[in-house]
Image (cartoon, rainbow, N blue to C red; front, side, top):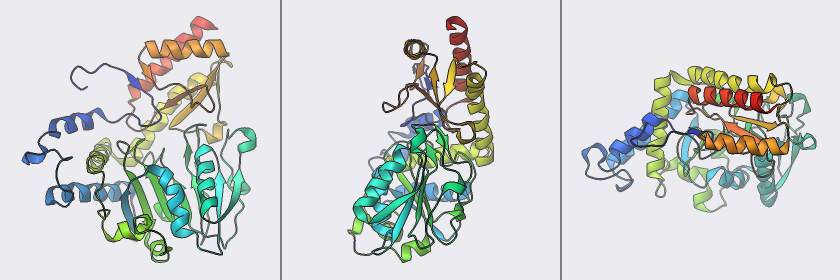
Length: 365
């Protein structure tokens, strides 16, 4: 725990909890990084000291995520929202179509940006059931001539997650993994591209990670502005312009913390155990708590639920706030409650929430 820090349970959906060990190390190195007399935020991004930090973050990401050599790892800016436009700018060629699997608000935003660039369509959607589940692989309909198929792996607002991904053959599968990247092992080679804002599992806001298969870069659109070309950043080791250097430093330290936890297999097991604590309360509450997501689509990252009635829900959120639980309000567009249990959220925090929910039901049912 940082010195004099108020003790809270941070369940914010993003920006979200960071490992305390990483924050403490950043605190100790903030003013004088590696005896340079400067903060990492003050030094040139062309310096050897910063370049070592930058490259170490890339190396750690490649190792943890088992990224094949035929993929580029890029550090970009603008969040996943900029990627909603950059993806079709780079990969939706004239005369081609792209398909989008609709599973929530962020896939809807990605689709809308795609429509501004070229011809896109819905390959599947669960909007009619208020996105309480993700589309099954059998529901997904796309054309084998599509430029790509776009998917959002985890849906923060609705609390749903893809537990298996569609096989798209020769059509590149492009995934927005902003809210569950590195929460579990996956086969990166199944994807043409993976992108993610850092502010859930990877570090502070301001950094966006893009992992792109090299053959896609070689055939990307070359008639867009230079800074919006993925190839620009790939050929410059993500140093074409000044990078968010402190954010990349923090990302590298979070990746180092993940290594110390035992890697993605261990992290995935921890995430399953944390989510189970809260889902068990919901499932055993006899309707006092109701989950939004269907069980086979439940997210391990974002647990969404409602309390028995509107007045009790307001009381639940107020009492939770007074008890030190932060970020349990559901997204403004859907209401309810949401506990975001990303990698850095401790098991003890989920235990405390479990007990609070049980106690609240006992007092109010």
